[in-house]
Image (cartoon, rainbow, N blue to C red; front, side):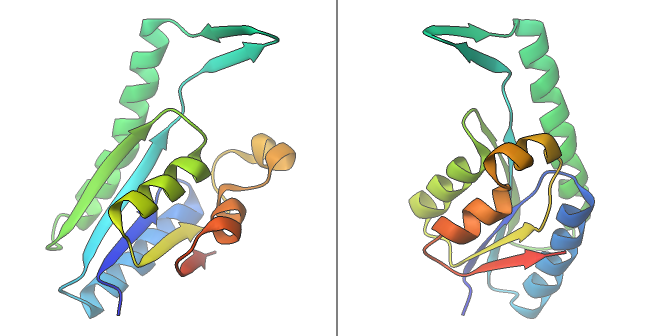
Length: 143
């Protein structure tokens, strides 16, 4: 049925709910692989033709914050077999997740219905919406 399951996780309340659902599904499918993926947002700005990147200190802080989000998930899944976490850096979250799913041949994506980026979602559409619209495999959206 679902041999490889990817959970897109950002630490938000709906992501935590999605993690609960993913863990329940994993318990029902003990031979399946569950991978939790978090996309770290690097603070880069494009102004006209200029590409401005943040300092190494800020990049390190963002990386540490992303690792902290994944550490929480690691603790929650530590009792499950065949369950891992992965940190992806750079790019837009939806596209990075979709690329990762395609590159690693997942069977199911689980995502929370609303993440942490509310202002960005108003401008660009939510990560979950983008994933649902462009995924080539089933997507479970959890409220």
